[in-house]
Image 1 (spheres, rainbow, N blue to C red):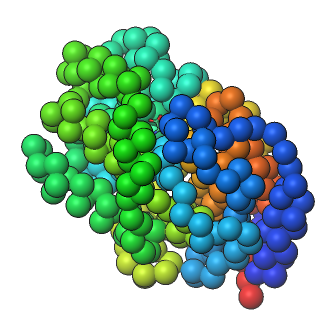
Image 2: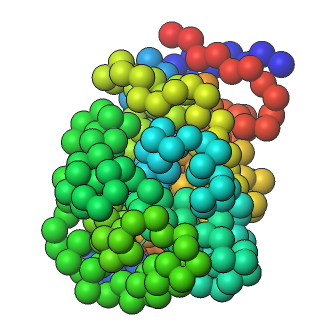
Length: 321
Ligand code: GLN
């Protein structure tokens, strides 16, 4: 069925969703990374970007927070571009784990396979795949330039966050060396982990993440810079990865109730992609037990429900002036 919405209907849905969810309580800041425990838990931003670049922003959408696991989507795109969809499937995988993002058990269960670039194991492995091998600075430039391309503007490293994560990432060190034992780290292990930790420590705004989401929804065409960032053929691969594991062990419940593929980070960010229709981002630090922002989930879900949209609804959606 064809479904037509006006831009004003979309803007109104975002505004209502923001107002209805801003007083929501529940959840708590990530505290296993000391820096994140101290972020103001009342911050809240909601940003939606249409395919033509028009953006609707409510709340703290220009506050720079830790991108954390949302970065996994951006670097998955980079290695899909550099190595191709087949190599990513063969070297990492595209499977949901059904387990927490930092699970070592998941690696053992998958028989020495990191499963997907969207959990810690696969994301560290993804950083090891970035070219050129052996050159940490050049690899980092690639990673951060790709962030700029996808988000439409630069995102700086939050030094304090980087230090805080580097000093406490013992579980990720164990993951890295277990993967090394299984030959699933394709460069120096310590360098690969450091690149992963650094990319998680990038400061991003909800406005930037919303542009990134819209670029994915637009099959790689960034609506702000008008640059084709990745080949159209990769768009369904990226959305598949997000759909299958974006919220870790809560991914099925999320997709079932919200209808939008989305990826979370323990900094409180959520990036949602409705292919061909829009990109959305929300940010609020308090998290549920799986590490997904309570308020960001509620806000994105409210937009979807208000507009009657869903990735599996079978509707052809048009947004008019
Ligand atoms: N840097 C965090 C970690 O490795 C990212 C986790 C997340 O956002 N889910 O634990």
